[in-house]
Length: 486
Image (cartoon, rainbow, N blue to C red):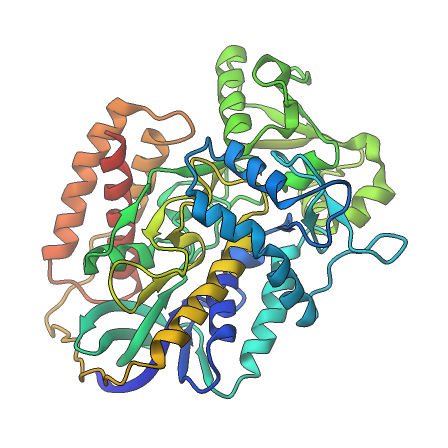
């Protein structure tokens, strides 16, 4: 263990939430931003659809309509204060990222283009073709890397987090070496929990590390069982990470077809293909049971190659690598784990119930999404609440003169690797017991086994490395999800 290095703020995560928080912190603060893997590997960069916002409204749109759409999609279990913050501050963050050079698509008149997605009553989704997340993340990252007060390290794993006098101690592993860092404030922006499932649209880093560490610190974790399954992931039984066929494809007119190549959503919801994600996913599962088939498709062939290759270049190119021309062929799809509405409970400034600890983005629970996230509210949430967290830390830091104590993290010399197959077993338990329509009997059985795994990892003498940290995180996440379910 190398000696400690002191910072004012440690930000764990380099998606939109973590980066935008770091960018909005006062430039006199010494900030460390850590990326679990490469800087561009995050869920934010995978986001295809766009950013939902009422910005210089057209077509009779309003913040009240955006609010209503968000509440309907969330089953009215949303936190109304958080929703108000989200929709009213959306225009400001759109202005912020435009000033950073984010290149949203524009129409023939040069005006910002807006598309429609499921659950929205107006066209209010600002987008960069079908790779909005990558564009937004890249421009914010560029600005962060240009700040002298911010140090960014990649391929650095947050292994342990401890509350100490004056702040927090963090054990960070990079290149096989553990280093202890201290900071007055910590922002967890570690993304989702997708890797707790056999199949997910999430990137490889999404093992719920921040949520598990916050839980171990005693922070409140809320509604972790509110997991969103996207209805239209590309159907690929061979891959753990499933390519997402964006919500905006249905927004631009794609039809959902069953195994008989027939539209079927009229059996389940009057909004048809543009119903919210949870409704569509559940409808697909019910239709699968009705037809005794798991073959489903998206059909947008009638839009033609010129339009589709220009509007959805990333999706078009991906499908071509699979031998599918979306202007001529049906796109095989099936629901897949996609997003987490629950997480580390925070107020509207991103602050947890542990002083100095913040959470932003998908790992947080602001309550803004309720039961089910409205399409393209995720990047918006990360931007709005990341900025608010930074401002809150800046205000509190003005009066905070404490200096964190030195913190050490012991490493056992005789520690052993964890047993093989733990993460695979956890993923299989979650896939079988809690996917779209839960199987309560299997959830009860799975909870018992996950509890055993969690205790074994907590009490055993294991090497503190990536395998251990991720397995422990997954076990903790699965334990908390299934505990809520049964």
